[in-house]
Length: 450
Image (cartoon, rainbow, N blue to C red; front, side, top):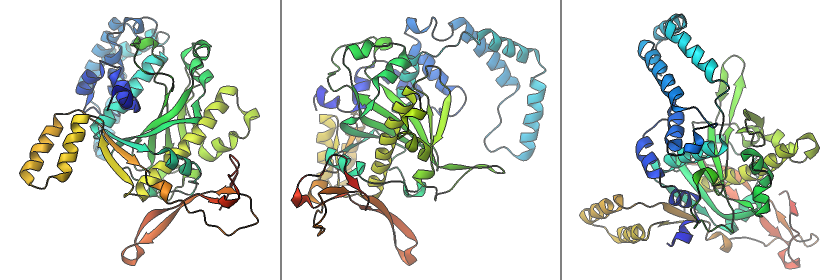
């Protein structure tokens, strides 16, 4: 594939433009970002060579060194509790925590926090760079699997309802994947929101930039939370010019989580495989507020607000519209992967790897297979899973409803029991269809419920 073809995929075009990434990948390839300050260390590693990010953007090195010194003593004298701690260990930990707060080193920590309270600032470009790097590390760790969704399949999935889909219906084929689309013109990152986030008002609008949805990193954080990072592209950008990292606005992302957990006053957060998409909660950072705090909104309420612009401020409403469209598409794509396994063809992003994979598919002798696999390990490439190429052949439009004008009938997902005593189930896609196609083309957006 040529460089331009590789730039069709966000993971490839981003890493092609970031010389630091391979170093970051080696350093954090096995890192757990849910533990301690690992994410902060990733941020610090990225900002290290960028002098402009040191001043007025984060903390000076002498302050970071002071922090590390204090924390090293605290962690040595008062170690953290293990994940599988017994009741006795928890009680002892609580007792030690109370003791810790009476020590001189704890007072140093309190003083350090007071001293730096007004110095710590969020630099949007640095945060965006860190977020993308974290997602890419997870993507690489899971085998670099890109699922390219055919544009015709996208149109069908956008006309498919997902409200009653349960979290138990969805499983990822890998720990982290990337959905890739041809840029979707009607799902855009509102340029005003993006400029407000980065405090560069009217700069990109004057360049007539438009950021279209072109993909999403998807990770299952646990049994009931799906992390999604939407990626966007300006279709006029060829990504040939080298741009300073702190001024590179060509890789916008929007991150949120779908939480299928429910709050129980006695038990805290609980979850069930029966929780539906309509009952889920969207958790996100407010992109219309540069220093916004994490927020959450029930999906059904978010969907309702997209029709009530007067109840939102300008930036809120624009983001809700974006999320409403994008999240339904992502959930539909996940359902498709769980329902269909025959309409997927796999290729490689690296021509050398592509050649080896084709040879591997034709090889049966175990010794030769092992040699080819060893060669593949030495080649850097992503696996591209092309999905939906056969869907154009299977659209059924034969409906005898002669009095109706041509229109789309919405699709939906059905949970079909199967197996011994019908103890298992799988998703069946009831596809959207054009009713009375013989009478013409449906009006844009004219969709009826089934």
